[in-house]
Image (cartoon, rainbow, N blue to C red; front, side):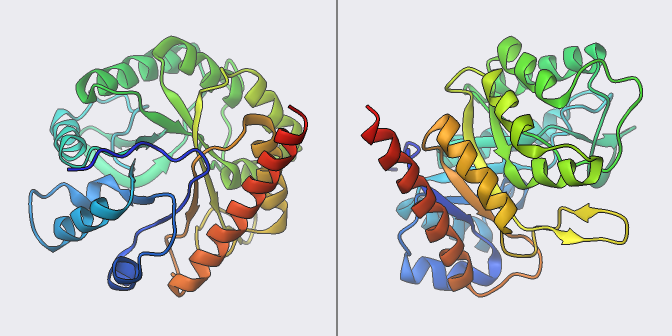
Length: 286
């Protein structure tokens, strides 16, 4: 099997079932493909066959939704073992997981739930991240979460929490720019200085991937639906992110109301153009 490494200026899309055949026959010029890890936990079958076909042509990013890193329950060892087997089999360029909880008393809630950014939670999450990294034998990325509530007993901000998690565990960060924007709109803060402050707190190599997605206007707030095109405000944030951290593998994330593959490829091309322009400006200043 060919061993792939992340392409520095790579822009990818999420590989979803409606696009399997067209994507793997046309092989569009993408930096990588990302899949949800849990969809490929079976040892064989049609889904695994598709994933291995994709693996022959692109670097892979495995994006998990079920480890529940911030849950008070013990880390699900069976789940982790399946992830480790998938990582060993596919040798992905990137492995990531949401910074959230979604299980209690052994029951999975099928949601990505927020938690208070407290010292107690930090100790728990650091321990869980280290367990995962030790089992996989590699660094993982943790993703900042879209959230619709805040907690009175938080000891620190989200960016402070993530910066200390990176320092203590050695993990990296998957920066979801849309999540940051949604939170800023819903809680009334300016996303631009928040993001730049976040980046200043991190080592230069900490941000290992960026997600771009669309959101929807709910009755009371913005909702992170991953079901529309990236809005101009999120593109503007992305320009700032690339200017601050350089070329980072970037994903167009679209999970609901899937459009034609051509729409995803247009979004990816736009992200790639922004990345190229930022790198060109940086080269002029060297």
